[in-house]
Every structure is written in structure tokens, then in C-alpha cells.
Amino acid sequence: MQWKRVRGLAALKAELAAAEQAGKPVALDFYADWCIACKVMARNVFSEPAIAAQLGRFQLLQADVTSTDPIDQELL
Image 1 (cartoon, rainbow, N blue to C red):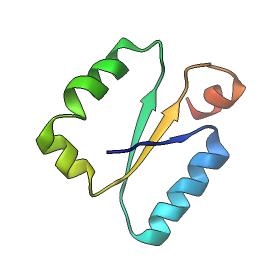
Image 2: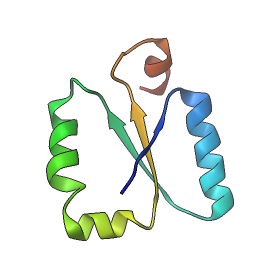
Image 3: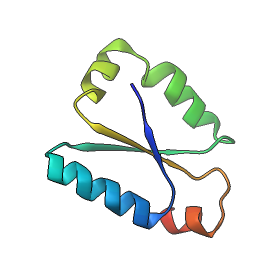
Image 4: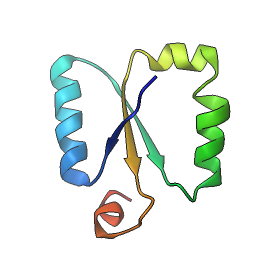
């Protein structure tokens, strides 16, 4: 399972449009290196076989908001 990282609203909109064009639903994960819950989700939830199997149906997008700069703030 591979999450495609997006930065900024324009990149997110482009990926959403591409997924819609392909007829795929989207799962969007907000992630930050400093976020403990994000690491728990990655390690214990997304890797769970039943969940990973279901996520396989989705275009997986990950908004990395680690730096909390203006680009990240726009997404938040």
C-alpha cells in the first residue's frame, strides 16, 4: 500500500480530479512527522490486513503537514 504525498491545495485538487476521472474513491490521510497519532495509524491501523485490503480500492493521498508552513496551513 503506497500513499501518494500531496503538498498544497492545488496539488490536492489535481489529485482529486484525477481520481474522479479514473472513477476511484479517495482516502485522504493528514500526516505530520511530529504527530504521534499519525504514526500509530500507520503502524497499527493502515497495516492491518483487513483494512489494507479495503484501502486497496482507493486512491491513497497523504497530505504531509509536518512543516506547518503557509502551504500546509492552507490544507489544514
